[in-house]
Every structure is written in structure tokens, then in C-alpha cells.
Length: 51
Length: 176
Image (cartoon, rainbow over all chains, first blue to last red; front, side, top):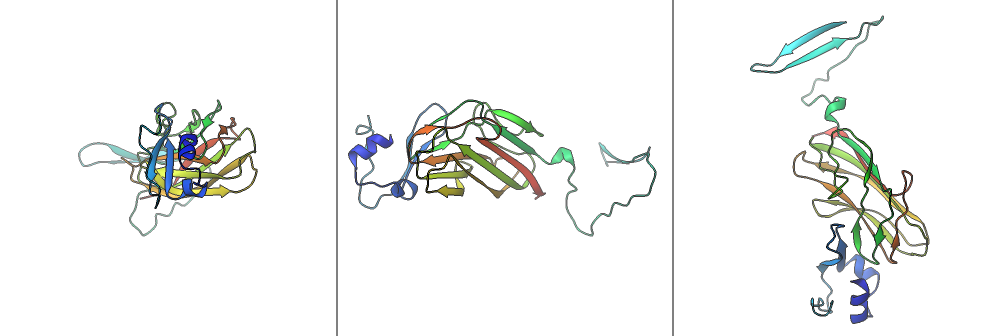
């Protein structure tokens, strides 16, 4: 998930993933997902873009 | 050994027992209203990982401490949700540590989640360390509230295992 997002938006920084974006994995077998996307300028990637 | 039995109005009873040992001891009940805490109504647990867990880069990932050291009230789920849901309301001291098998990462965060959301960020390291962790206190209502332990790290990797490495624990420090 992280690598795919970074490929879409190379300008994102580590700090973005600690503030305006939260990727999460609840260790329930469902994998990584976007729990929060509040980036001021970049749109949340679609499921299609993350395939 | 002498005992006093106080029976409830409709059912149940409490027995106060004095040990059969020499000497005079004094227990002072405070002039206050509250619940007397005894060992059986003070939940505490400690668990650790016995197998390494893969952590994705920059992703808050729940830590799966699957081996219990103790769980006095059977309130920690070490098989499915890896969460502590105590059955006694009160204030809990929570501790967590995550070890990594390598120190290549430069940014890691340990966090306590309460009811599915970040409650406290325990610590953040910005250097090449193997270990991240910390402690905090949290109020839990004794029925629906639960806590879990997550980690964020900027480089994917694997947790290290053992009682002295990746672990999660909590203890009731004061009843509600």
C-alpha cells in the first residue's frame, strides 16, 4: 500500500504519514488500508489506482 | 483462624478472616466511599511475541503479542484481536515495547489504541534504534472499552521476539 501510494505521489513525506495520512493494518488478515486521508492538496487514491 | 461472615440482603456473603498468627494488626478503612480492591478484582496481563511479525513501511500495524506471561482475569485476547478488554472499570497503566530485528529504520512510533483509534503516542524515535516503546495510563469502563498496541515505522521489517523484546502489558492502578 505504502509503495503504491508513493509511486502515485512521490512528493509525500514520512511526516505526511504521521499527520494527514494514516495507513493501518489491524493484523486481521485483511492487509493494509487507508484509515485517514486528510492531505490538503492530494486526492485519496482510488481502489483502482491501488490495485 | 477467626472469621466474620456478612451475608447479603438476598444472597451472597463476604467473609473477613484473621490469620492465626501472633501479633496485632490494624486495617484502617478510609473515611471515603469507594471499592476495596483485592487481587481478584484487579485485572493485569502481560504478553509477548514468540514469532516475528512483518511490519509494512509507514503503516500503523497492530502488534500481535500471542503468548501470555499472566492474565489474572482472562481479559486479554492473545489469539484473534490481540486486545485487552478488562471487566473492571478503572485507570490502567499500559506498557508496550517493540523490538526490530534490524536498526535500518530512522523513524518509528509506538502507540496505544483505545476502541480502535489512537489514544496515546508513546514514543517516537528518529535514529537507528532497535527498540521503541513506552507507557501511559488509560481509563477503561470495564465493559466495552479495549486497548491495543500498534507500531509505525518508516522502513518495513520484522519484529524481534521474546519476553524482553516485543511485549504489551497493563495493570489496574485505581478503580473507577
